[in-house]
Image (cartoon, rainbow, N blue to C red; front, side, top):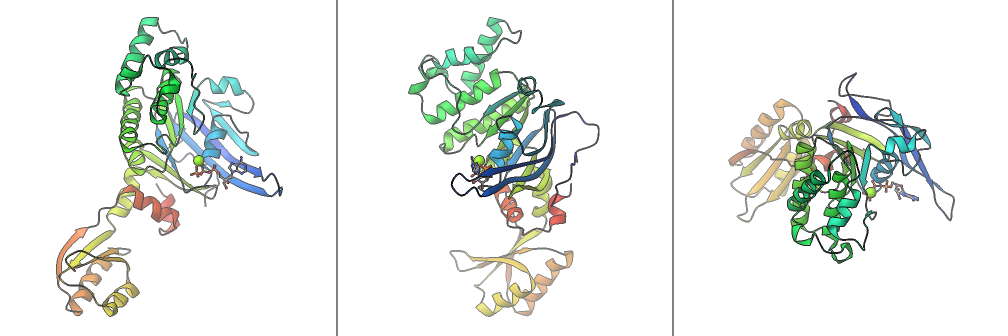
Length: 339
Ligand SMILES: Nc1ncnc2c1ncn2[C@@H]1O[C@H](COP(=O)(O)OP(=O)(O)OP(=O)(O)O)[C@@H](O)[C@H]1O
Ligand SMILES: [Mg+2]
């Protein structure tokens, strides 16, 4: 487990977020029991990076994000935003941050969509005309143009979420934190939000940290993922590295007939396999290859058992499966934390 301070993406980089050995405990109200929500997290994020913060329920994602945007003070450790210690110079640090947190939509209910956007646009030296153009552009990207003059309280939850994200963009900070931006939204709105985030990462050059259980969002938007489990970082790597780490190591063997229980038992004794039977009664054996010889050993074993292989495919693994393997500890720790 990594608790040491580690800027593993190169020394002397232009880091805009540096958190070091951060810990956070909560006290249960009734029993006074201490919950160690974050047990020591260190993380450095470069300017312009788009980072996904993943982990199972209760892993400490929201707590970490709240500490990063100054809503919670850590019990130990430091959070620095553009070199400014958030515990010491909170307001100065907060000028660089916008956040969209769950259940915390900083919207004015009795103002229209456009009025909200104008209000939050801030006055960072942009002319009224430029602001108006930027608002129009965002309304269009979010498919909200037809709602521009409607009150916020008449919008659906998904539309409110889109507006919250638009406002975080309009605030024009260098850093945006998003906690579960697509939680509970339907597929269409999740898709729109995913596209919007992808575009703003590219067009507006923001540094983005987002937590999500929505793996397609993470796989498409984030270059880098940090996976936390039980308050600690278990993996910090690029999405492409993690995918290739697993991708090359699993093969599916499709046999012409169904395997017997005995065959399955023998195969499972030697290899890490998942088996399934398709509709036509063929068996699909997916083998995780730990050593390069495994691939040939599987073939030899099937041959010995006179099982005909109809097809061999590289098992296509998506990010959801990678995540599950890491969180369940199905991958050697060394591989999971190496870059
Ligand atoms: N205000 C609180 N009081 C007491 N315990 C809390 C509080 N907030 C969070 N916790 C506990 O701290 C741990 C981490 O919670 P946190 O909300 O950070 O997890 P999370 O990774 O965001 O989970 P989820 O995926 O469900 O959103 C959990 O055990 C949770 O029960
Ligand atoms: Mg959470």
